[in-house]
Image (cartoon, helix red, strand yellow):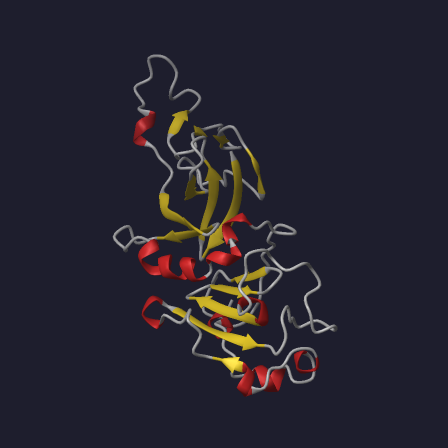
Length: 247
C-alpha cells in the first residue's frame, strides 16, 4: 500500500507496493472522469477516486463503482483497468519502460550491478525522501562528464579534492557505451578521500569496499536520466524527469 506519485512528460503516474511485495506503476487518472486518484506519497488499502468513489485494487483493476456494480447491474467492472506501465527494480531503483517488447532490464544493467556490488545499493537508506524540483533548462546537458572538472571546480573542489586531468580516469570499468553507461573515476592519493573541507569523508567508510574503491569517486551515468556517485562513505544519486525539451 505504500505509494508515491510522479509525472513523466504529461503522464500522471504512481508507484505502489503490492501485498505480495512487488511494485506496480499505474496511471494516476480515473478511467471515469479523468480525476487524479492519489496525491503526494503515503499508504492506502485501496485506490479510491475522490470524485465518484470508483475503487481500484493495487493491480489497477476496478473493483467497485457506486450504482454500476450494485447487485443486478449489467456493468462489468473487469472491463475497466488503469493502464499499467512496465516496471522493473534494479538495486533499489524503479525503472519504467513504455516499450513492452524491450529486453529485460538485467540484460542492460546486470554487469553494472556486479561491478557496484560492494556498495550494496539496494540495502542503503536515504537520509530524506527525494524531492523533485522544476528547472527551466535543457535537461540533456546534465549527462555527466569530467571535461569541466579542472576548470569549473578549480576554485571549489580543487582546494579539497584533486581534479587535475591526470587524476581523472575516463577508462573506468563501468563504461559500457552500447548499454548507455558512461563513467569516470576521480582518483585520490589517500584512502577515504572526499570533496570536503577536510579532504576526507565525514561519515564512517562503508564495510566491504576494496582499497581501490576507498581511494576513488566513481561517477556513473545510466542514460537517459540517472547519475550515481559511488563514494567511500555513501552513494549519491541524481535523477531528472523530462517535462519538455527545455524543462
